[in-house]
Image 1 (cartoon, rainbow, N blue to C red):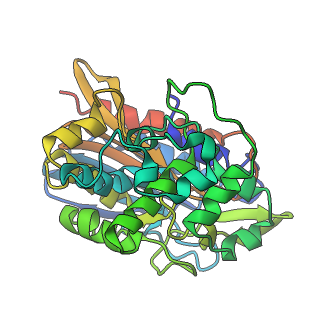
Image 2: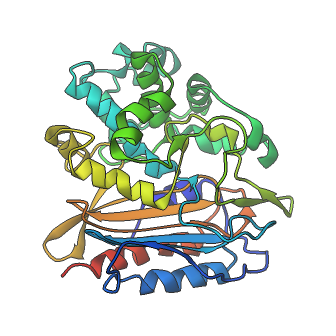
Length: 382
């Protein structure tokens, strides 16, 4: 299956598995009672295969109603080799955009923002930076239908990896990098055309309307109400532990790439979370804790197209739909698949084998993880 996971990671890495494989450690286990019937075997096998190919850590979750298994394999970091835990955080990048969409849609519920209004009415600077796009609407931004150039590929190739780690950017700087690509506006965008720039525009709008940082807006509108106690918007500097450490290769040397200041505060890439909290987000959304039915349905079904980066999936269970969201920041990958009511969920995340920062092909492990998570969700159909 083709997913946003591939979109995120393809921008960052080529497949260069050059370090020895990590040792497969005993998993940490967190579960409620009666988990014998939960189908975790395929994910467990995939976790072992990932570690054998050099992935430092792998976390999996399977939940069916009140039954749950959460397990971590591998190590927090390659230096201390301390065992990974299921509560360790990681950068989730594109998997966080539905979380940013929620406060935008709350503003729509409150009548403070109109989905089909031009973004320039809320963020006048947009017209100055992108004059050819000044008719772009909030709905188009939420639905990835703007055709705006993606700022990140240009940024990623403009400086060495070490500088990416210590360079913090404002929303305006990210937008101006995108504008400097010189790409013309497409004549029509009739399909999803992912651009990280869309989410920098929306995050900037949220800060402008609320008069508060994105971190505070998401704490109030999303993380707190959903009970996501291990999720935050990153600020510049080394993220606070416990983290699953991710690695890149710079001139053949292994580089701890857990600190990535270019992502700090980003609407597309700035969220640090856990596998369990990512699943908790959708459970809260499905149960009506975050949005009313009309705006929730815009995210899941949409009168024109889905908003917020969630993807509905057919074919996992006969006659039923599931919701997929996926992403990964830097050397990470995360995928979550949920039933529409949020009762059945399968999710997994890994710190990827250390690789060169590049715009090359997607690592095979990343291409495979969505299928394995989907297959696990399908095993709970009955």
